[in-house]
Amino acid sequence: MKNNLSVLKWLDIAVSGIRFGPDRAEVRQELLEHLEDKAADLARVFPDIPEKEAQERALSAMGDPEELKTSLAKVHKPWLGYLWTASQVLAIAAVLLAVVLCGVGALVDRYGIISPEGAVVIPGGYMEDCYQSGVDPWRADGPYPREGGALRSCVAVLHPRDSARAAGYRFRVARAGLFHFQDSLQDPGSWTLFCDLRAAGLPWEPAADEALRWVRGVDSAGREYPGYYPEEQDYLVTVNTGHGCLLERDYDLTVIRIPPGTEWIRLEYDHEGVQWSLTIPLEEGDQDG
View (cartoon, rainbow, N blue to C red):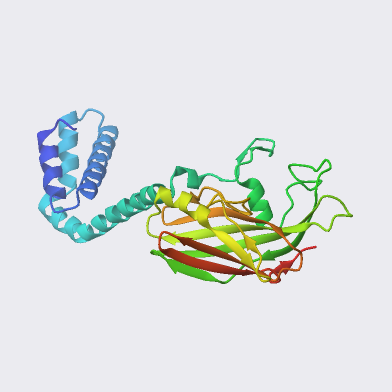
């Protein structure tokens, strides 16, 4: 039937009123299949009927193609087809944008590659995430069972509200875990603060990762906690390389050797004319012994 010129001409006229191309092709195929079914029915009823005659009778039974053209044009509005196409394009664009902004790595757990048995075989930032959540990764039932070493206990899980804006970015600590570290039961120990530092705003320049190493600290008693830069003394504040989306980067920031009982820590940044600070109260948050 696909070689019958009368059939092909009839089909072309019938669907010519459908302006949306994909709809037009789909309806044309449906009409062709309907014609083939009618011709096959005639051949079953009249076994001796010639194939071409069966096709012509089936075509005649389908009616005037001009009238069908008008009816189909009313049903198949082009804007519906274009709207559907646009929605598909936008969906694909959204996925591509997410990959561009966040990177493929952002779609994978940044805290480590998990083996089929569930063990973390490449820790990555897993331990920092545990500490920021108030979980001891070295606990007996954890992935790194403790075999001696320092005694650890979570003092508090913190969600500071303070934020700062500088150089087109908004800085904040999304969460923090305060831990008490002791070498032994006789050792008074000290606190260590594990922070999830976020920087959101303009697309982040890679050089800014290095710049954040100028972050230093000061506490409620006036004690200072030097950062990685300037390299004049042992640093007590460390900031690891950022990860995450281009529009928001997060950093694992750690402050060590905090005397127990300290009320707050203020993170300070002052480098190349850019200044900001964030205060983290150490007595707030969910307590976890």
